Image (cartoon, rainbow, N blue to C red):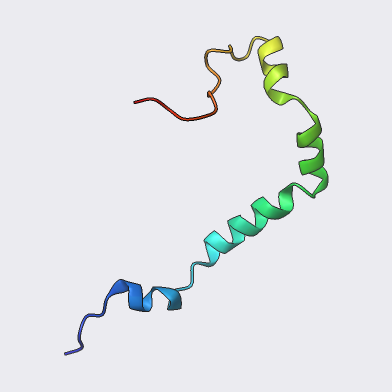
Length: 66
């Protein structure tokens, strides 16, 4: 019967390619055509102006208080 090893010993050998794919997508999105368009459009302000969201509904940036 084989011994059980610590997960930390074998974790570098486990491939998580789906995470690598999403990380690559996030990094290259900003340089793509769609990423450049999204960067220039003030989508949050447009949604507020059209009445789709209110300022209180927007996520506040910074540290959350609990």
